[in-house]
Amino acid sequence: MTAKWAPDSWRSKPISQAPDYPDLAKLEAVEKKLRGYPPLVFAGEARNLMKSLATVAEGKAFLLQGGDCAESFAEFHANNIRDTFKVLLQMAVVLTFGAACPVVKVGRMAGQFAKPRSAPTEKIGDVELPSYRGDIINGIEFERSARVPDPERLVQSYNQSAATLNLLRAFAQGGFADLHKVHRWNMDFVAESAQGNRYAEMADRLTETLDFMAACGITSETTPQLRETEFYTSHEALLLAYEQALTRVDSLTGRWYDCSAHLLWIGDRTRQLDSAHVEFLRGVDNPLGLKCGPSLDPDELLRLIDILNPQNIPGRLTLIARMGFDKAEAKLPGLIRAVKRHGAKVVWSCDPMHGNTVKSSSGYKTRPFDRILSEVKSFFAVHRAEGTHAGGVHFEMTGQNVTECIGGAQAITDDQLADRYHTHCDPRLNASQSLELAFLIAEGLKAERAAGNGKRIAASA
Image (cartoon, rainbow, N blue to C red; front, side, top):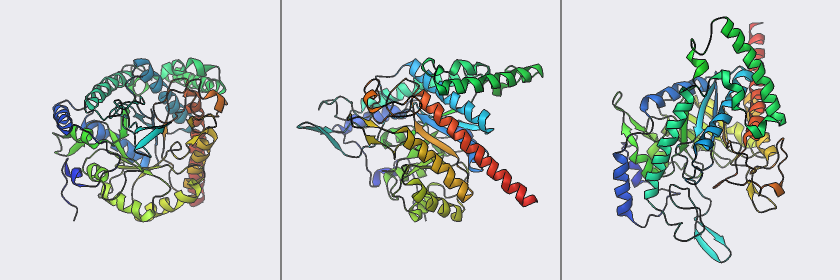
């Protein structure tokens, strides 16, 4: 029998990637303060997302999940939030209009502050300090005092998340997302590029369609779906003290929800069966994600699925494959076949970022864009071969004109990485590269739909 769950039952389990707070009394005081704060999201919103993800699991929609690698206090600005939201809207339109596929939009925003690290310390010259673990824990400055975990950062993260959510809700529901404004979403630095021109041509076609619909009486005023959009938030549930402090009982259902975000995921470094992270998330009713790296054994994956989604509820669990471009075709089919035999109702999503990080000749951590595209192509090809739905993509991006990932239509080189390398942790796609990825995904979805139609025609012949 499954052991009884409580919001604090994770504290008796083995935990990794946890900061070592020197002042536990201060941490406890901050947790108490957060427990009295209002929830950032609501249980009903999380249930709505799960319903939408259920349509993805059924092969009838696509999950677009993107945003910052690690949100920072220093770059917190309304324009940055707006521009990232713009790019996600652009990508969603490319997918919806280009592939005739509904898109579920989820941001890595309003809570993506903590980052797992491959080593507990980092060294520059002869100086070795604790690793930077995200602004919610410590500072990025390579100074001993900055690297000490500070509980007050949890409060600042909550406040920044609340402000970000407020703006995102205004953008999603206040007219900014109106499809009649599709041209205005194009970023100035992208507009003259090949991807910007391709987007503009698609926007022209969409505008013609909207004009025709308006002549038939279907406008933003009569059809809210043209004026508004549903937008959800997500982050890795890494810092469990913060997650527990924002976990609440839903007054309608009596179930527990982690109200720090709509969707929470478990990282590839914290997915051990008996880990604190698996224990915590098994007990909340939010939609969950699980990162699946190349070391994950199919039997272990099935045991994790049974722990995290014992009732096999569609939309509850998204499996986020992050294999690396050179391992996806070898490692992914075994996992897909095992899940299919098990009868598990999951969303399959592709994270083409985390398995393709390299160190450039100029010394910067980067991600070659051709490897990112290669893994996405492999993801779609494997699912077509297995007869399953390539249900989503999970990627790190920004609306800023950064030079962090080499390649793409802009042909960013190693020498150009230093020009605008602003990330606080891992390299992100810029708007042009994100659009390029969206057009590739749309082509993959078209091919998947064509293959499905061909099978149905053959079956009825």
